[in-house]
Length: 234
Image (cartoon, rainbow, N blue to C red; front, side, top):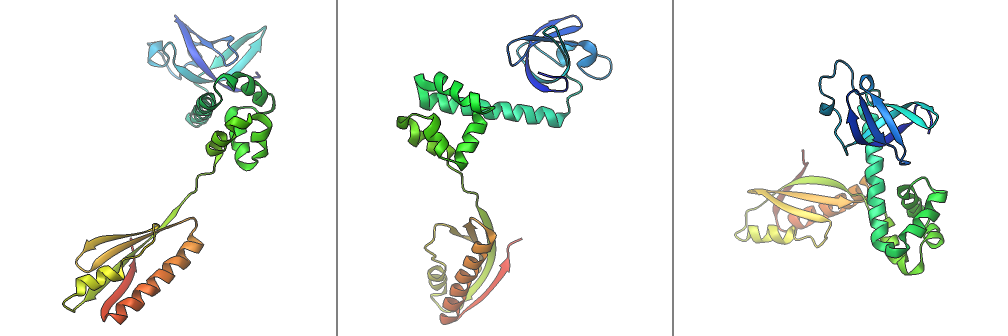
């Protein structure tokens, strides 16, 4: 631990003008009242309370005594450190659930080579060989599910205007828009207006698919003597 480091601490005691906190390594640190917040502080408990987790900056380290500051940590840095903490807690909980009695031993092995469990799992998403290296065979399937990349989808929306003057026009429109594709959703907007929502993994391939589907719809509409126009959905 060095001067300038940001650390996540747990408030333990508040005594007059000093706050005692527990550091990640279980040692104790202190924050004097002038380093709690800017300006005059009437009540310390408006800023810190026992058992609350706070992000502090290390000011000085001498003879195993760590002096800290709360007021010098920006809101951006606070959020970043807290987000990392939450990610690590989630990773720890997931691994404990999967590894059960083997968790402690495997956790130690992982942390000898990686700064956190979260970073290990992130690396395992890119290289499955890491799972073979650290995880027992009986837990491989569950860990691989945990590290699977979640697909990100994009959407394209089109507003269709269609009108068929024949007696069975409504039926014809339903048949034309009966698209058997789980990644295309048709929504009725109002008389003669429908929204098509297309979902895909990237805009380039999705736009090609959109154009193909729209061409097919237009072809069917003309074959059934239906008026057809398409607009971008705003």
